[in-house]
Image (cartoon, rainbow, N blue to C red; front, side, top):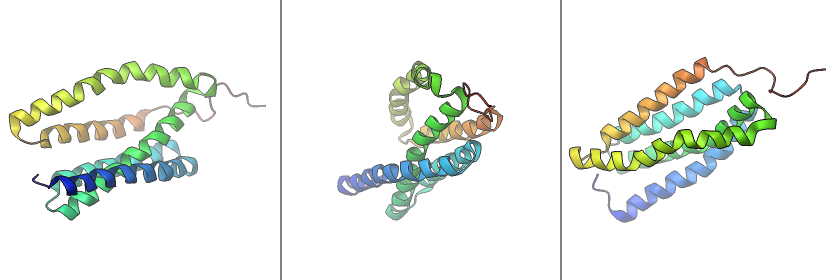
Amino acid sequence: LGVEPRRAGVLMSADAGAGAFGRLLGGDLVDRSANRLASWIVFAVRTGGGLALLAAPSYSALLAASIGMGLGVGGIMPLWGALTGACFGRAIFGRAMGLMTPLMLPFNLAGAPIAAYAFDQTGSYALVLSAFLGTFVLGAVVIGFLRIPRVEPGIRIA
């Protein structure tokens, strides 16, 4: 987008700092809200940051978008743990988290090369970012159908 390297570094730092703060806010949100509601809020913040990044007409808008993206990414980490615990329970929490890694690996490995190829073909990351945001919208829809047990699996009610 023609942002000089020093200012681009500030954008990356804003994203990272907001991500750290997003973990704190996301953890508090997950503890105080229903998991489904917390999911939708985190997805909305992340998607809003991405949409702002796509539309960012100025450096100030890029900075705001970077902060939104960071807050959203930060919020995903505590949310992921909370949803995993709620759906699988503490007894197999580690195994459940571990089994998710092979499912995500192909996407993680393919993401950067696909983004680079798309940029080489179009001169922009807009297509890739739009596709990524589409997955967030899809994720928000899927969360709506997720069956979250009322009682953590493995816990006996007396």
